[in-house]
Image (cartoon, rainbow, N blue to C red):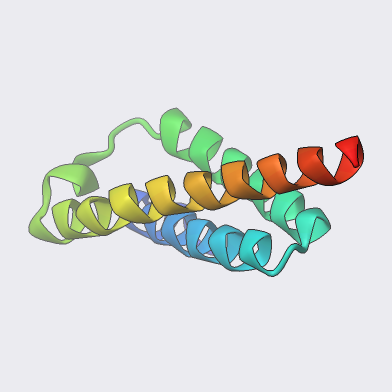
Length: 91
């Protein structure tokens, strides 16, 4: 298994967030939740790191600034999906 560096874990977290957004927009909830579970595990690994100096590097700051709006957009897509699903079930 590849070394779990802060850089590699944050990159993986970003990639999983991108994929989650794609799959919720495709109405593929099973894949969305599978990716969400994987992303949660990656975040646990990030939190378990003895140090996360990557966040303070220019590359880390750039990744996090890319992640923030993407994460928000993914959450909004998930809320839209949930609202649509609720309306369908009420009909």
